[in-house]
Image 1 (cartoon, rainbow, N blue to C red):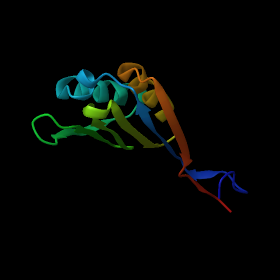
Image 2: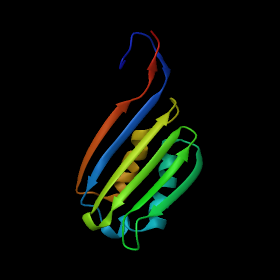
Image 3: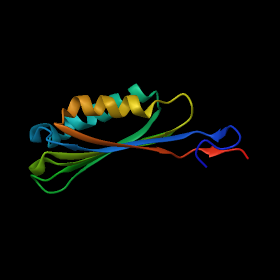
Length: 125
């Protein structure tokens, strides 16, 4: 229950969104996106466990994801449409998923953004 009766027992914050009008060259640059995600992990104050990527065909989009001790950060791209989705979910008071999301947005320079927030915490009764 958001804003529950008691305090938060488990802190979970989810920031995700859609980015329109991004530079197709950046969205198709696997090395650049990996660097952006690694830096976003640092900005979030999370601990990187692993990072991976997958390209959908020779000229297709990319998925770049970081598994962090606190959860995950991912970017999914469609360069042909200048479109990307970004997902940052972290647990713990020490992390800042919004800062990581904002960092990624800054690097992808979209013309339009839709951002969503989810409280995935557990509250005491």
